[in-house]
Image (cartoon, rainbow, N blue to C red; front, side):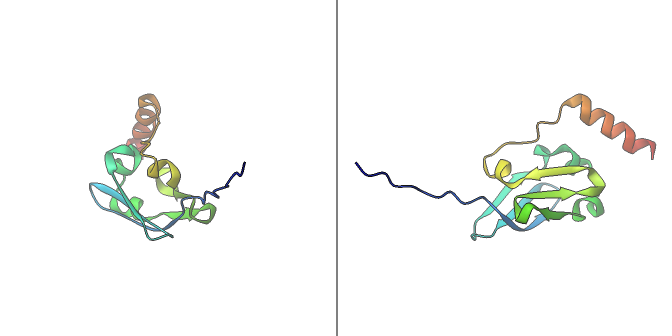
Length: 100
């Protein structure tokens, strides 16, 4: 009996763009992903300047927004998994933003 092995490559981002409704990720293999911004409340509540201040982390395995204290895994976006941040945590974060 023979067994074939398939090497699964990580899903890596090459660049991203964000508008008022969507997070769009272009992958290094040519595919693109687009998800509703409401999946990621910190991005939804961020300003355009905060949303546009991002960097790829882990060779493109994730995206980090320092101004929003948000990290998103490209694999989770690809798998259709929205943010799992609790409402309580989001509420505290929003309250802290409003104090500034």
